[in-house]
Length: 334
Image (cartoon, rainbow, N blue to C red; front, top):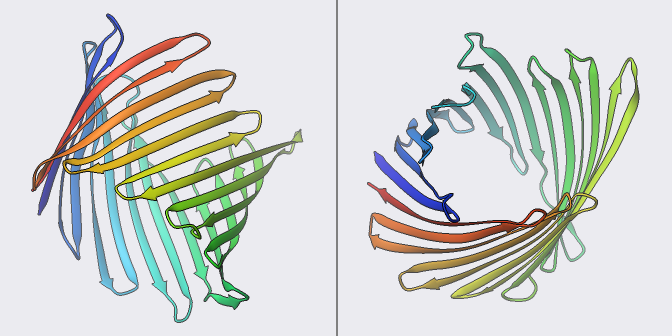
């Protein structure tokens, strides 16, 4: 059996508005087949006392190769606010294939609000097919297909997708087309979606890995007594990662027209006592500018003990606001 725990106290705020909080986690796991896990996690805050978190566990078993079963349970707790929802999930999975791969997954879920006695159920069936890679000029092409049917009291939904990935001389190109339709019995509303996703990445230059991702989604809302509502969303994300041991740096830019613009940078240096990570984020969303800088260092205290120290500064404009935080995480594995 493996027992682990983590404690993360954090001091945040500016001036007289300081707040002390601590995240904690205790977990135990054992076995291989079957295997089980049990844990409790949460957050404690002061001076305004607040305690919230969840307790849960799970067990998984594989009777024979290609067939597996899993059962998981979670229950929240909190000293104030909404009661939360308890969940119980059962899943069965079949896999197989020769020269290709397929999988079929069935899941059954039960849930109920802790302030109510009635349980609600939902179920889903999902299938996936991965065909053998096809040889093309200069590389390989890997097609993949999937479909899902989900049923719960609030919504019935059917979705399907088809994708293909091409590996060409150090470059990776992928195209994914997906669509779905949902129906809400209570409101008689039907929604239809169609999504297109294009991505590219390259590993041609040693130590430099650029990537680009573009997605676009079209939605139609239908109702027997109202006119159709049509909407469209798109986003673009690009990243460049520099990896020159013992340091690495990743610069990212994401843009959603009319919604948000975000710039991120993450720098890591592996030192003798452990890694040091510096991260900065700048975002413009809904006409509001905000930023965050964070510095984190990981220290190895002993073979089974570790300590993470982190601190940072957050600020925003319109109106101006700022906050500082300093925290640490002590963790152990037995």
